[in-house]
Length: 159
Length: 204
Image (cartoon, rainbow over all chains, first blue to last red; front, side, top):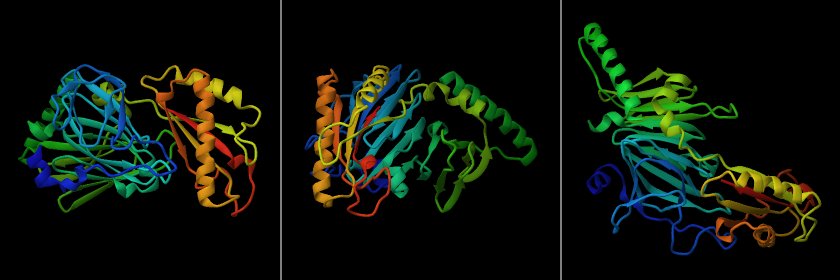
């Protein structure tokens, strides 16, 4: 993961950005609450730096830098703070590499890395305001989004 | 899911065999990006880049496939997407839904008619797993941007208290003040416009 990050991405993407303003109480200071798990089926694991992998439940909070891993029977749907819908299919490893969202101005950025498996994405308010701030990548392709719903399938990437 | 994927892969293998005969080579698809239609029928697009190559998807069900290191444009359809990705799409979270309540001028009092909107919202909320409410206050353009940021947040907080009093969990509610940035009805500055004095209750 770290090697891939070093070779494929500027790792600054993984840094949490300060979010929220005086007119917004959207974020608890110091905790980057980037998204919430809404639905899941089968085996879905959260991998967070410095913690043992934990099975996920609906209602769990996703933070910047978190990795979602699903088993052969797994799938999970997450809603990010800007209304982006991220859904991972089976045998998937997906990283929320960067996320920032200011609820008052609706400025921010989304960076998702699909290292294997499948992803369905519906872009949210950041994509509406500044589509160039929404980026999705696999090991070999980079997507630029213009207010959209799409599927990314990297199933064939790691055979 | 994996069974469906295996079927897709088996299909790919058969197509591959065909191209082996026709083209004398067989390439592996490593990545696939499928543009889905927007529910409201609005146009949308995804640009897919691989190395120096770029492909723009603009039509629903257009597919960018990375084939032996090269991107190429193909097509799929709703039935094939459902077959291959239906199990994933079944876990897609509900799309956010918004309810609007109006405010009286320069005040934190709800305008008449708000109760029925809140009741409708509560009914929809009950169906959502791990529900969140984002309560966003808006103002008209009378007053400064800073004053309207404060007023809009105060309106959002007033609505939060109404919702909490009605039994909504406080922890599920986020309040946002968006000031005069997002008028429902565009106006010149300093114009009083009742329809812009509102609070949006978004549930997801």
